[in-house]
Image (spheres, rainbow, N blue to C red):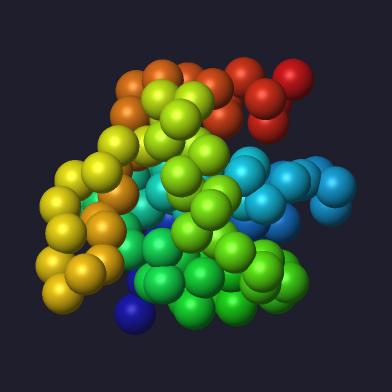
Length: 105
């Protein structure tokens, strides 16, 4: 079995963020990773918190839902749909580009 070292794991991607990254940058990084590496452009915040934050060993923010609303106010996320009372968010081009400039700067 051949190993593909061109594939970046979430843990590797997450570790490239500065240790001082804000919850906002971490949330957006998870959305960007899902888009770039998994081909998925939407997510529920609970999935990001329960899976991506946990796997990156980041502390779970007190209110990641408020962080998502903040990102929506900045135009970085948009509400995609609502299922069973839970919002599904989609990363916007502005959010993608904003994270690229903040993290690589």
